[in-house]
Image (cartoon, rainbow, N blue to C red; front, top):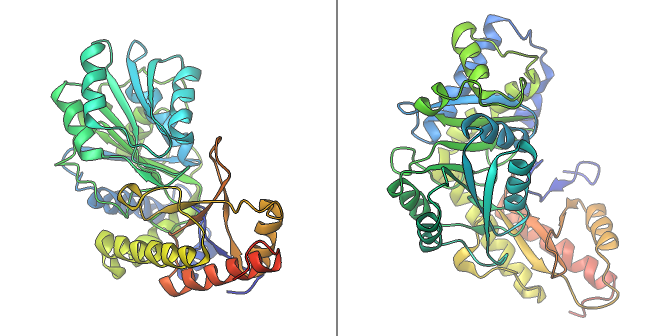
Length: 369
């Protein structure tokens, strides 16, 4: 790719394939049978990734991933429910903010940004507050790349008879979650992440029984997942104007996902990308924020150089001029920057990107190697 079309080393939007971009060159009628079949096929393929067809519905929704998170909480948590929000980064805090804005009762449990929540933490918190009805968890916290122990936490939540809402925005499609082994009420993801589609559509895997009993919960007409599903089940159509080009692009991206080998192959490539990134950045003397044991192969956070000549904006623009777009840090206590490992990118390109980073830091006289 040229400098005009840089490689996006970000957690989404991300670099897509030529085939995925080409799929957006066709205009679709939103009520046309062919488009309805495209939507149905898309939902069927998405459900297969989580082995959820027997227990869950896939409900697509226009908008970014945050739209889908808000829709899931607003639809599936009753107005007299209470959510325990587990936080170790910016997106956990956003979950809590959504609960606050929606008027849902909630409590929070926050650990450091490099410390996963544990199942023991959740067990203790649920024992202490019987009023909690739902637990909300970020699977892979994009602000650092930390991986929280989902299977263990899900088991504890189920043992307490509570319901789990999983924000799997940055992990779905690359990290395995089996709906028959990991009990959850809702798992939320989006088109522009590990499936390598384009942004503009979220989707929620909602437990069938929970969705059926959720009528009247929602704070919003547009974000009512129960109504969205009921209408789609009856007519095959979206209630309101769908993001037709985004749906078509994601459908094409899923074809490529399966051609590549599905989730195991996608995970393997991202893990190889992450390993190449860590090795080469280490060779430059740049330190990862997280230890390897809790680092998901999705996005990596690095400590910024301490040299006063380092300024992120100049660094960003210089790296961009060499053909790569990075991501700013999202931590409050430590200056960092982030590099995504996902998208239509191979390990060789990750190594080339780090070579460009090294060139830039030498040009800025931050590195002397």
